[in-house]
Amino acid sequence: AGIQDGEMIRLTGRGEAVARGTPGDLYVKVHVERHKVFQRDGDNLVMALSVKLSDALLGAEYKIEALDGVITVKIPEGVSPGEILRVKGRGVPVGSGKRGDLHLKVAIKIPPKLSLKARKLIEDLRAEGL
Image (tube, rainbow, N blue to C red; front, side, top):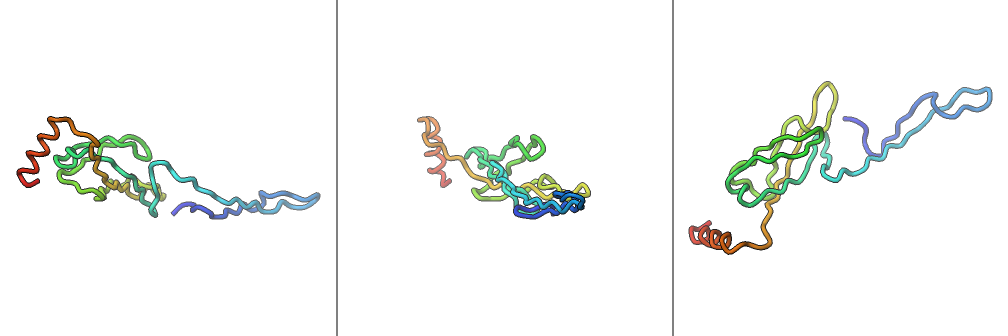
């Protein structure tokens, strides 16, 4: 499943050669930096997706930057905080044209401050039991 962090790669005959000798082997140790958006989970990629409260309640479409370009993701109506949405085939390439999946962990954005109109609407929702 690809090269892992800390893995050693041996390149036979590519190392330093001594006078009138044959070149030795070159060993390369791989260090993989963390990505600022994606985390790797095997062949899958995981990222946080911040969704507006109204979009979580009503559903929406979001454009997100995936590993290889912008894609549109459907946010289902009534999505819950922490819910994982799976986008098939948008994870880590694993060879032979196959890829893992992209997992989007939903976070609901709660506004820090409400307008008077928004506050009244939320109070009306609470009165209805929501």
